[in-house]
Image (cartoon, rainbow, N blue to C red; front, side, top):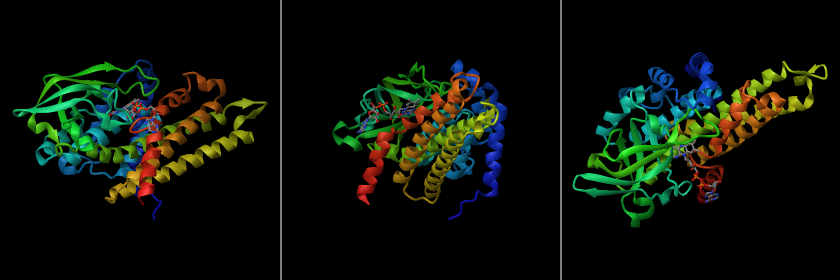
Length: 380
Ligand SMILES: Cc1cc2nc3c(=O)[nH]c(=O)nc-3n(C[C@H](O)[C@H](O)[C@H](O)COP(=O)(O)OP(=O)(O)OC[C@H]3O[C@@H](n4cnc5c(N)ncnc54)[C@H](O)[C@@H]3O)c2cc1C
């Protein structure tokens, strides 16, 4: 076991932190308040290789592992969780599904353009009636001649409004249950494919979340992704990796909130003393820092297993569950340390407090993570 970062990882953290401080920090409030999707910064992230972090160099990726990827997502989230969410959905959901399940032609066509940021990707599993129970997908795909005809609609798709490529799941054989849902690659402009309502959200407001709709959408047969009927099973594998990114995102939010609270506690005076001198504030800071570190260890363990090619269903669910619930508590305590000033938008904790809630919901709620973990424990 080696708990030290490599020189490259330390350098990577520093360069992402510099990028986030310089290019993102000055705009965070404006993007949040006005729900502005930061397309220009996302393109710059593409130039830096962040949109293809986990893909091999021969496909235009940065060839990094999941620990490096966690560092990237964490550092982006420490400044703006929305940017981290956009990058995470693009990398570990959309592009990774094509990379993992795609044939050679699909990989070569899509991964390089997604990895460079020329194209933005989204991934649509959730439907209005199929959230936690994603196998309850109702959208359908029927093969007619050499085209699939898709009908139905998806909800809550991150990046939907800005995506050039969408990976979406639809039922191809209702009688086959979990093995009757297939994945498809849709390009913007495909007839019958359109994006619907953009959601007005509590947090993560600079990320776009919206509907994806199919009305007699004609898709060439070759746009089937992976084996017919295996799209749902593949999605679960994709989510195993994706959950590492949501754990990292949670850690980034917690770290950002903690940093703000620590700084504030050393400046704010009450009763003639800095509030950091009060033992109850010190205990809060100690508990927060300890919990963040524990979440990091769980997340890096899952990431290291992923890089070693091992199964991570239990480990990534544990990391995501612990890190997201930890981050909700840390953001709450960080706001508490700010007193009334934590409640106003002049201080960053107000936004962390709103953004963080997504982490216990997206890519499977805490209740579903517990269910996933329990299933693995009972199998072992
Ligand atoms: C900002 C945002 C971005 C998102 N991005 C994407 C995306 O890019 N792609 C995508 O496909 N989806 C995305 N989602 C959807 C997200 O994954 C779902 O919201 C989530 O899986 C929960 O589904 P639901 O909202 O339908 O809640 P429901 O499934 O209706 O759950 C409601 C409540 O019931 C609980 N519950 C449900 N089933 C059980 C059970 N068996 N046991 C115990 N409790 C249970 C849940 O834990 C929850 O507390 C996003 C959501 C948000 C808010």
